Length: 457
Image (cartoon, rainbow, N blue to C red; front, side, top):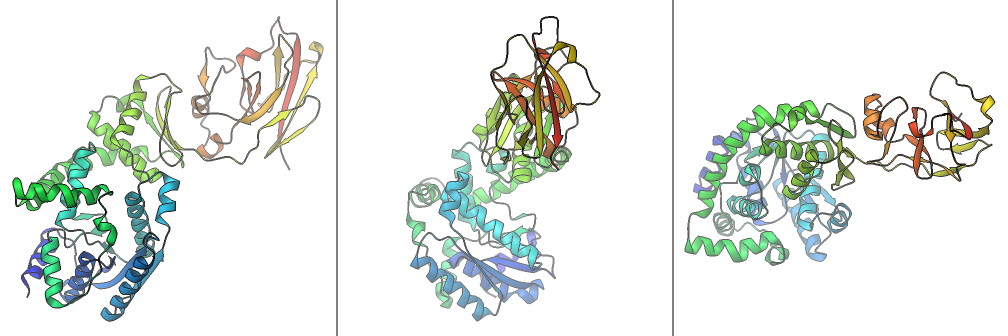
């Protein structure tokens, strides 16, 4: 048995990556690392008692070179007689749409497609060709960008159903093996482009550190990252995961975080919980700077917010923080002319001016009387805005519309569709819920308006 195979097998067993009997989907780029991974797993599929498939993603970034790599991967899988899965995606377009770098977008799409295939065709494990230098690059990138314990733990050998069987091997070992056996692989020309952060580290920085400071840098960092991962796993399993899962039980498109006891937690735990919420609920990664901005909301007034990636917003509410996905409504704001019914999406609304003697109140919230000292020039019907406040009848002071709706146990889906009727840019009526104190009928009222809302159909 080749020494490199022995080394890889020891790594797989030490990290308990494969139990036996699994279907394994290999992420195959056509480069040396992924080709070695496919060859290694294929060679020892009987030892591991596994079956194998492979997936290749065409990023639509390198034209003919990308097509060459795709064809090569297809031929390689035919040679090894393993099922081949192929997908072409426009990574550049995805990056622009979601505000990602090209590297981040490629990673997100790759894991997304791998997960879809694994679910559809019942692959138990997804194997990626990360090697020991990838771990070093990841640690340095995270350190430079200000990562915490999670980032400094490097690339895990296993996370969920994703395994990295050759994480303990180096690029030199792999290429020497492939070249010695005459096994073909392809080289991605963008790997030499130093305008990518990871490439810059790999080409210009890490080689100098290995020569001048530590020739065993990669092995040292792999050991360090594993030690840090033990600490991280303890914190995750005992604190972050239980707390996060309790919070994730809230609304479909939102997560509410009560200030008590969240504000009493260590700031590192707060940051990790926020990261985990954003990844698991909204599938976005947030930077340490964004986390600091969200945490700063704790000491700010209700109504302040931080806009995150992918239409996700963090909002300070009266009793805590709320992170939610802003779903664009197809409701078109309309002006409501007194005296006639106005169609407005799922409802129609009527405003009619009445005399004081006609004022009468009916039970329920679908009909209200509003009073004005000066005659309103315009009534406007629209969806409420984030951070918007009004003064609910029967309460003192101003209140966030979002807080009021939460207190009324309004479902998340209905919450985002809530209408407000305004006059002079002030909320007159939270439609179907509560009139504003500023427009209740008093002895000073000169103009009276009856407002009705009914569902269409």
